Amino acid sequence: MASLKSQDCGSICQLALFLLAVLAGISIITLGLMMNSKYSPRTQKQPLVIRLNSFSVSDLNVSNSISGANWDAVLLFGNRHSYFEISIESFESFVYYYHQDALSCALVESIHLGPKKQKLVQIKFNASGCGGGEQPFVEERVLKEIKRDGDNGTLHLGLVLNFQASYRKGPWSWVYWLKAKCTDLDVLFETGPGAGMMIGDEPRACSVPLLK
Image (cartoon, rainbow, N blue to C red; front, top):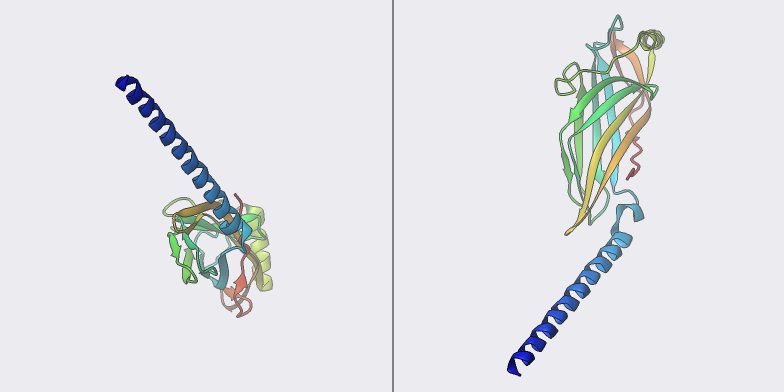
């Protein structure tokens, strides 16, 4: 009889532990859904801000190639929120001609932004900018168009940044792929042969949509 009571007690204890585990699981899921609906970057104004402060090019000699050109961009990465930490993994960035033809690429080191923090990042696009990898191939058609525009004094360019960003609040985190674009970037050539600078002194806001 004592043995049966002991077995009954053990079964009741196991059932109680199972119910507690189920309740704990439901509570965690409910809390996660609440956190996601309240704090997810998708429900907030995009926490990450990117602004192009300056852009210049030197040694641009359009012949059979422009691989010897040096493109230099300074961007400000800012975290506008007071509770998110943002971590960006190392990523590739590209200089584009009219937003469709890649001219040069560069690797950018990882970036961490605490709440309400910002950081200036300089990106140098040159022959070794892709970490020793190959630069984009530029078609002869594009080279002719660049030479024509350069002779007229202005190049119409853009920057594209492809990266993965993690938004963290306490133990909770959200990871997204982002494709930031700094468009309508006009470079004026008046400082010397093959050298130009971005038109205008005001920083340019870059588009930073959440992809997934």
